[in-house]
Image (cartoon, rainbow, N blue to C red; front, side):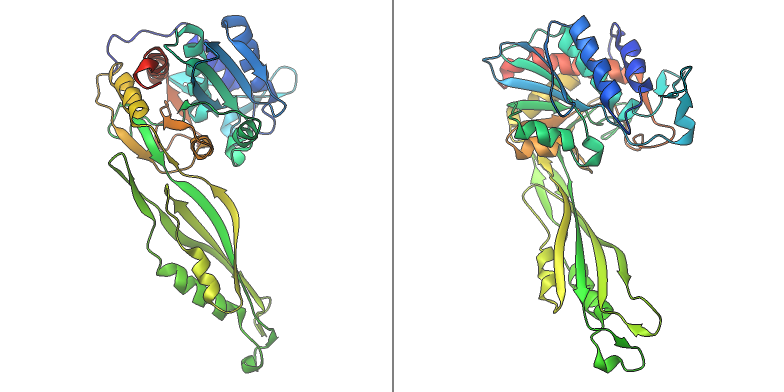
Length: 374
């Protein structure tokens, strides 16, 4: 797949070490491993903040900052992905075959974290401070990224190492210039309970909820365009819960709504409150991302094109990442990483070693060619 493919020194070993370290309940051990490696193997100024995020910086601290961003927490492993070690603790099962590493977190996203760490070790940044950042809590709503931003983390540019491989075509690592966000909300309809034999003496909350669902059903999906790429969101009612017994008119009914948001556009879900007795509440709002700097997005694509025989493209990712929080805070973001669509969060999660080497070279090329955008 790659032109003149060369194995990155130490990358496979580092990836195996990070992937084998459990980090679904507590990411501390994985953070320890990252911090220790950066201190031993790089000239970076290394910091571990109070939240557990790990940073390593090289280059001119007075220059604009280019961040290589990842996360070292993972979703809980499946039964085939965990085993007991010799001390009675847990470790993640690793398996290598056909040039791939299998294990929880290999694709999402410790492989890309290892590639970024290796790039920080080897790169000679061109007119930027190069910052490696690995966050905690990405899988539970961007907890680490949000805390870091609140503490002042504000790089001018960021390459977020979430998956972008095989989006435009098989064997190609693309550059994501936009992704959808997710807004989870509820519509709660309230009525007045009565015996089902005399429904006219009550107010049926389920009927009010159904009227609100009809409002949602008629909403157009949010959509926009980012750098010529179409981004189309969605709105869907996913759950409905109301009533307490077959012979009681319900006085409460709750409807769950999943909205995939796009940059700059939202569905007008508050319109459902026009139905009497209905209240709309946002439960979670993961922001979408749109790259705010064309020159940076083009430079990242040029770097990706320079290290592979395929033809990568600017593409759109369907789900939210920490890039949304960074972009929302003013950082120009792209996403480029080894994970392929459908690999993350599965019991057969894996990553290609060859693509990890490719990502290393992309990250290094972006840093060493930063004068094109910084």
